[in-house]
Length: 340
Image (cartoon, rainbow, N blue to C red; front, side, top):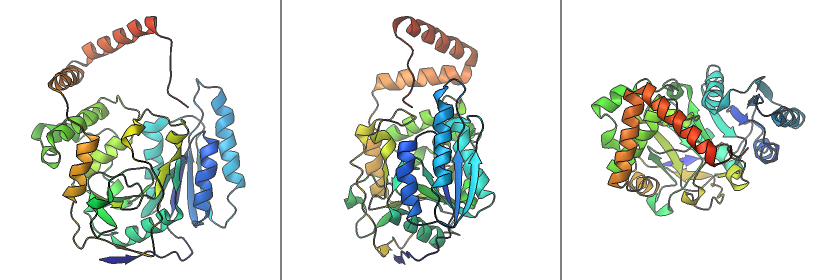
């Protein structure tokens, strides 16, 4: 099925820019957004952290740059936070706020450098699949070998990245940062058949940690909302987004960049070929699971499952173990923190 990718103005799909204190990457990202001149731009800027005095200046520099560099006619909606909300609450709260006003949105973070064609690709997909409940998001990142796509320029997958993406209000309404439906889904094994055993083991671990609020992230919860409903994402054959935060060592979270291929940008043309049927590409997903969810040794499974059982069933004892470990480790190594 051929879908035209129009580059005509005006660009009427709202764009949400999520930022914090990285002015160097923000300048590059905002420059790419400016090339498509969205008519409605929402900016969520998280506030400074109380324990980092330098944040006050950094966050203010980011806001001043944004205010002085929107040089096209648009509705600019500022969501500037006085205090730091963090990654778990801030971004999903901003997305919810935008989608309380809009039917759909394109979401870019301050270290996601997008080819301009990414925005037009999202606009076309948002319109084409607007009412198709099976499709829940569009991703701009492509990390798989092109042979997974066959004659198509995009496929439908259960694995979609938030490194430059778009969604609809109808899909985001299912989001729950506390994953309250996970215990029942885990008990019944509802998701188990969707993944290989190794992939399910590691995905289950992630959702358990979301339930325990051990992760500062918000994106695993979005994965769960989609997986629970067999919700599909659209993955382009050509990579449209590059994470320049990891390249420059300024990412907020640890990540094994070695798992990612070289993220070259490859603009899309004026039309793309989509599968005739809206269904999961098992070829794509199988290769994805093989690479990103490697085999776990029996010992690793036992250690992980034991720790999870204690955390889920003996929370008091788990807190004692965690605190004891932290105290012991603090004696032997200096305090460290994630890269700013």
